[in-house]
Length: 372
Image (cartoon, rainbow, N blue to C red; front, side, top):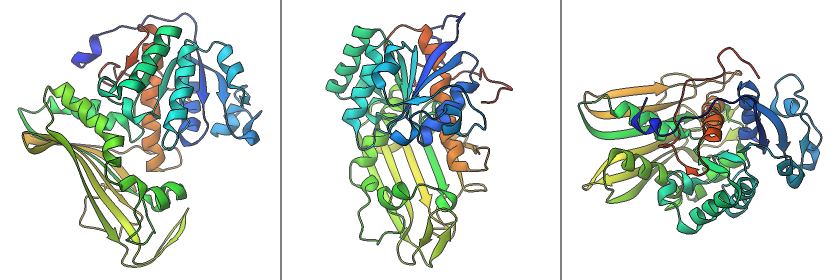
């Protein structure tokens, strides 16, 4: 157990923890499955925005293959008035951070423990914007709920795992966290084509790669690791590289990507200590394995997460998570959701508050042998 994981100890619950999943996109569907599989949690509500999903069974929405007896609703007031002890907020905060914050504080004021990946600024909650932090703490004071934010990239790959592994080295020069993915079989055309820019002309400026955006998303994790390591950051820097496709490629889910358009992206968010990049989060993303073959590649398949500790000794840990359909990208998302959902019973037994990854322990599973 890591040192920061001994601060609080959850109580044992005699009754299952009533849990609502808010949002049924990629993250929400996984959350429904994770809640259903957790022996301390009871799925009691699902909140949706799409009128076409209202009334559908949660099992249908999550693809469990069986009904779960929970019908989706668009009535947020009614869902929160029922008094759930926990809410998994799975709605997006990428382009609607103010609305996401309002939703989340609403649930906290209702007394719920909330876990979410939606608010990047709260990955390192102690250094979050003061106004955002104040709104959350005011909600905690008013309602007695709690909040834990962790990423879906996945968060554990950029905080607790590299910190744990760093403790195995006699000396450490650089901590590098890598996400390496080939999106050939991915099914997120809006994100892949427009946010990241795959298949766009090389003069297209992808929003995700715009100056300061990578730091906005991943800078909190850099600061979190620096805090745990006891080092002061000089600054956070960004580097971005892009490569065009040498030939047109066809993907299973998203169709053709033309020759000469963007086919690969590599960027780093670097925590600078004494003038040297010491804590690095790196993403290497391709639309086809043939593009940028000289860049880091996953061991096999379409993706992996890797932690590299440069020092004495050099340590490398690779995590390959695959969902039940053989999809690595979805498997990575599932591990991130597992981290969030797995924290609920600990948070429910802890004092009300605003928590981050250094506060919330990563514990053994409670769902051994269980299926959603």
